[in-house]
Image (cartoon, rainbow, N blue to C red; front, side):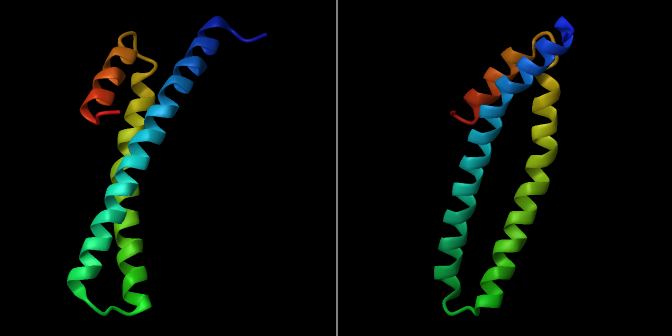
Length: 94
């Protein structure tokens, strides 16, 4: 039998998962758009150079978002966490 506190904690964590997916998708779309614009400015680049740019931007994005997403998950467990998450969704226009 699952303790009520554990149940509510898990339920709140599920509430934040769609927000995390939406933020990630928005940031990834922005990253790809910026890469595309940069590639046009650079002109001819080798496949290796393009891959290096992809890896660099992906790594930076993941490192920035990892701590943000961990904090979102922590917010879900706070008494006023869902209200804070709603504010974050507004900030990202989700």
